[in-house]
Image (cartoon, rainbow, N blue to C red; front, side):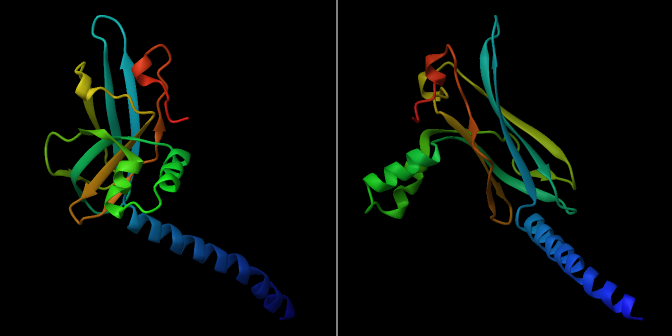
Length: 172
């Protein structure tokens, strides 16, 4: 009898931890139902072009509608912090200017896009040779807006250009 009480006390802590982890995991899945992964590819040869894209995966069990999907040229966090320190009294409407560059690429052709449960979708945009549409930012970040109004940002993808001067990292 004493062994059962002692075992119950010993197993109560891992059981409570497992319950807390499960609740946090379900809350995170409810809060962020999509997994957004940015990608960037450069093609050489006769058909040379750059492609900016993303893979969106619905992690929830219910269908989700994507209304907008944009790829933005972003700055690194140290650069953003430095800009905030240089301009401490800037209005909050300028915060987007501190975080992102001017060029934004629309990745969706058909609006809205319905994602079934656990369905991955790849969206892309072919970057032209026009100077106004060139991607010359150091980082790429994708922003997805759902029909519920939720906005989700992907992780920032670092892009290094190598021999292409318009792709070099200028955030340092």
